[in-house]
Length: 98
Length: 382
Image (cartoon, rainbow over all chains, first blue to last red; front, side, top):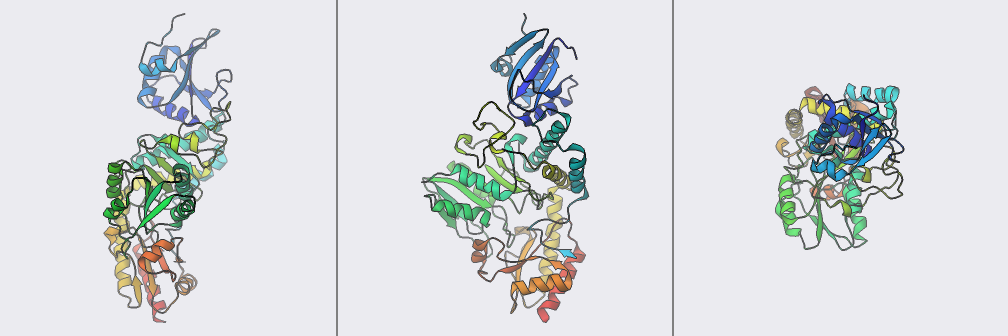
């Protein structure tokens, strides 16, 4: 995984993280569960991390699977940008240029 | 030894159920989803897998609409105590288990009106009776899918259609049917499905759950228990999303691991195939009992109208005496008495005397039925 350009998705429920993992399992995308980064959320459990290049596909698959996304962050390279959740579900262009 | 107490708890369990639980204890062990480490995540996967298997079995679209509870009793209590308010009215049948009747009777004393629709002496419910009982303030219709005393299957789909037409949620107590006969929450119009893990789902005790359908107003359904959920941890308020709102504290993950294996066993065999097998056994049992003159069998006495549960009495003998002799002299294990369902016994005419109850499972055999009938024949003669 590219260390300096990745996305993190947070979930409301820890079970949603597993639901997300399942939704992405057959896609071949490089998405994996990680402990929820403390600076992003006080929630326990797992978040989903993936290369930022995969963000559109990841969001589409999760939306199709009905996974409840609580937050999406674009991280790496000292960047820490939160993407509005509305943008994820509406399918708007979420690839943000700096 | 012939185990005929399956309506109380199923036995034996499939090997895979025991193995899943041992594997969880020895290899996984984490608190599901709380911590981010691999054992916690693996435990969360196992719990999710069980939700998914149950969703497949019940025709549920979103596995997260299945809440885990320690048993069906608590699932029923969650709906009755969480959804109803003083001034509401509830419609139920006269064949219900105390898991539903006791919470309803307690709420009656707090201003929730209750109508108990009578069933026939064979335990059969006419759906028209439910519809006639509906009032302007009816907030819930609650019935069991099959009686734990005489096995009679209630017309859930027809009641579901009535409930839907009137915009009233339907709670179904599937303790005696989940895993034994086909169940589809959408086809049957079920809004709340309470199920237990340790009967025909072949899992361990301490597991069960509640499916909450999309028509239910979640804001109106208060949780029974509030506490830690591993989510929204910076807040001291219970989260509002599923399943967390109704799952506080640590789940019985080892039990849920076993339940998952049990559900997959049922899915592997096929519920319809299991039903067919048990129906044939029930027919054989009914025929055997019919040939013993002093034995009276209650219920529909028609394998197509019931699950594999039969209640009977031996003329001139107390049920407890029959049960004791069956156990001590013939190794036939069963439950006697009122089976936590005084309403059902009143309906079929066996209150307060009670009955002897035999209940079969997917592991019961023709040989066992023949031997048990033979044992009863000896007891009835003496």
